Length: 286
Image 1 (tube, rainbow, N blue to C red):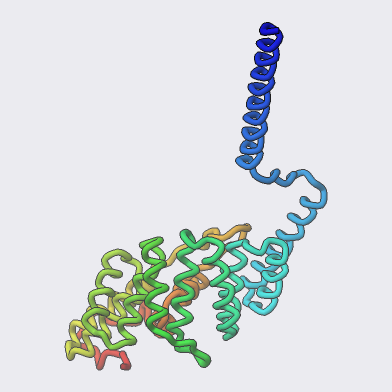
Image 2 (image 1 turned 120 degrees about the vertical axis):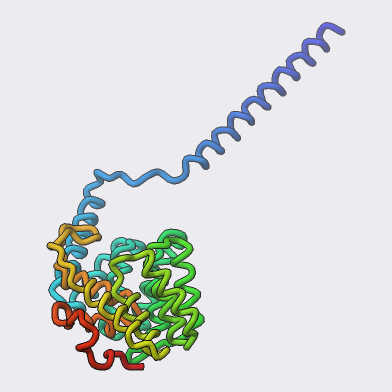
């Protein structure tokens, strides 16, 4: 009798241990499934491959239209591409640029906000463009210099070479913070020996302070930097598109709040005498 009870207790213990083991295996299996996440889409799936080809067709068409200057067609093609890949960063960025160029600031702002939402810790260029919109002096401005400065600071924190330092200097200039603007333009000039905007505005600040010779020294430096010539190079985006020096100059000016003003200095390249005693008033307008 006692032996029978012992066998029953042993059998119950064994069954309990087996149940615990099975439960452990089941939990471990579930954790493994969760850790693996959803299955990756098959890159060789015919429908997916066709969708990829369609995306790149729209994207290349958009890039070609933009390089021709047809920003309306480019924007439409970027939207077609984004219907397939809604978070494609280059498409969002260039859609915003095209909308900005057409004066559609709200649409541009929406595209840039989608861009920084897709990559909040890596898209400094998105924050720079948001800053430019809020500091915009165009016919339909969304001017908010506090928001502009906040966006430029976010961009600068992510990437010191993003161009955000120039934006901060220009915002200080627009606020009439002359000493702070000078310090920021000088910092931009030290870090970017090719900058045209920095010496241009440093010259303006010297002129405003009544120092015409000092203003002209900076102004000549701005003109000299415009004389640099480089051959066409591959553009920094996906796709095989070439960029001319003129296009690069326009792109640099578009990344500056006051770019349309300092870009005019290029017209003087090669025409400025180095002897200051021949010069009339320095051509800056407050």
